[in-house]
Length: 503
Image (tube, rainbow, N blue to C red; front, side):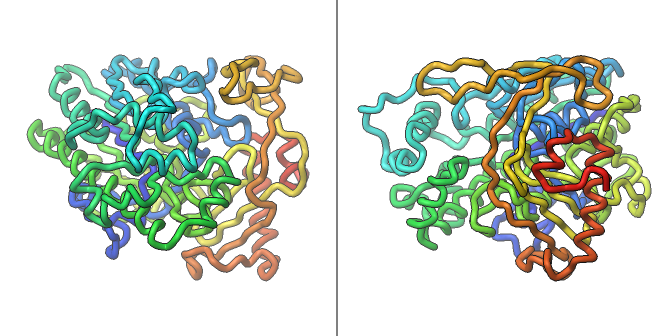
């Protein structure tokens, strides 16, 4: 069984007609694939954001309670290597530049071949545009809210002229080329990653004017700040409804552009008769909010708008034909799913559960509830019917745990601050027989308010029932504590979240 895993970054399920008939963007190729595949309706993020999600995919380990994003650990089982041991040829085609940053070490090296498309976002590809050099107005608009970042990105893309120069075209064309060059004497695993539809929401025509007016990028900002909370609040204070509509229109243009080039991959499947012996998984790492809950992107609290994400699976032995699966699933499960589909053993130390039973019997149950979220913030829990967000209650200690010191303890002027020195070492992570560093971390909680939502009655998650539904709240807190204990959780996390570890 050949396997292709397609990751389309920041893809909102509510912007796909396969999920929402009223979707504002045309995605004919994703729609066509959805009609052939299984559609998962309760698929959720795990550890956020980009690299934490990929560690779950690569290793089957949920890291949100143990560390922020970073490289693969020496003790991690690596999905491409496990497949290679099973006789697979493995390859990766990606423009996800975080892989070649220092905290992204180990992911690319797990494959037999890697096609790296350079230049997205802050990729160190071209020489920076000098601060005294003229730049287009749309770059100046970015610079107002992201000083230095607009010029950094512009240096990489200023020579782009045609649609074929942009990233989705290069990624999916590279995937088609890999499939054509692969001799297919043995099964293959190909991972295809499009960093788009991630910001910056910079797209060429005709996509820039499909859902708005592309020329408005000289009036408005196409890359809102969100990593810096103070800047985001200042941006919100100035942003008009017209500007928000423009930003969203450029995101939708990106989704449409990705869909067009994803169609080339499907065409190659037709041309090479791959449908009969190849499994395809199409998903994302997270969605992207556009002020639905007062914020951009994918910050905690992790509302369904960006946490309930699309997942489609085609398997020739179990064709979905557009059928839906309602069972709870999460990002980390794709690790075991791929191994199971390949006939490979799933490592014993994993948080991952194969979704193959759901393809064989759609009413099968894989999870009763899920935990998801972001390191240093609150923790999210859902059983599909109810969702709870438990926020930090006090500024207690916070540590990350790793066998590696994967960031410098010193940094040159003008760069990100160094990580603190470790304060201890030992055996902290359950089941890991290598010593780990204990590194103090600081985190500013996005909120200290707790939330409880009844998803079936309030799909928009607008009515907080934390005080009104005391019995449900306690039931969910008890289950949350039990799952944290089962999955592994440092003791200080219970303290800062105000949870009774002995409950």
